[in-house]
Length: 97
Image 1 (cartoon, rainbow, N blue to C red):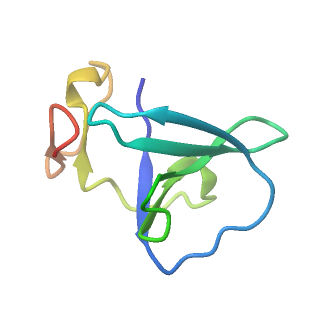
Image 2 (image 1 turned 90 degrees about the horizontal axis):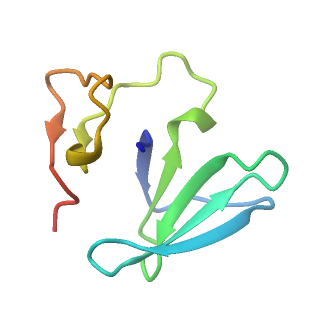
């Protein structure tokens, strides 16, 4: 399993309908994921207690073929061997503390 996400710091605005799912991460933080209520696609997520600080948006939510490549990769231990990252990407085996 993997996801390509773009992180944005506040200020940002969220509007529209979404279905939500909350899960607890490896370090105990709770993440609130929002999905399209029609097709179920993952759209964005926030960390509970930090909703006003940042938002992580699924890159597939952008209709931009020129979207910039990733700068870092977390949970590399879970990366499928067929997923090839650009050499300049900083890699973390797990979520950095």
